[in-house]
Image (tube, rainbow, N blue to C red; front, side, top):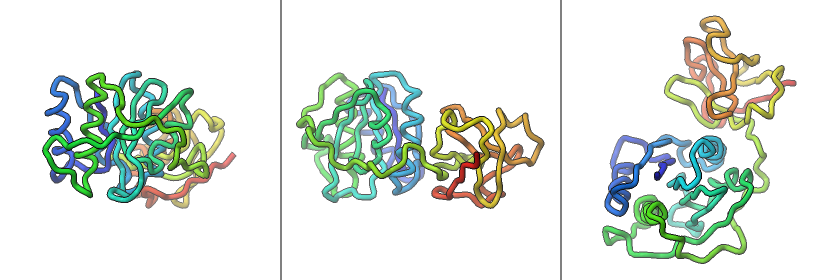
Length: 245
């Protein structure tokens, strides 16, 4: 399967045009919409989301992952293979945590090719460069570009776990870049002027109460039972989170 992880949104033509390329080149391969609303123009918080959610998918999955504020610049276009999964997208830090947490990884440059519809735009590499490469991988073609001996674009200064809000879901729950398994069960999280104890799930606290819990993909998430944590606590992507032991 091909899994889409982008900040393109569902409004407007962008996601639809990417899917049109995938369908034209690999019509029998299922395409799964994972995130169309990854943190916009923000590879750093997106990197922690991608690493957590990609681990849920089986090996041989191809991720078309595009959060690319530097499109048209000299940032590289790459294919990363990490523990059997393939990631296609920009080398701008988006794959930093995937690569760091993988047991084995290697990467290739994406070889230049004529786009399927005959035009290579300067500003839409998701459609013209990354989608064709993802389709070819999903059909079993090996990467045609050079194997990269030196991995530029790494972000060694980024922490292993990010104490920030990296995503707000449609219910107003605030997902952090912290893996819950690395936090003591007694740890509290501070954010938006509040301090929150851990609960197992929503039903374990009173209605209107704020808490944090381990979400279904292993990340610490701040929520309000029956309410919106983002609105009540004024949280947004990039808001800091304090771990209180």
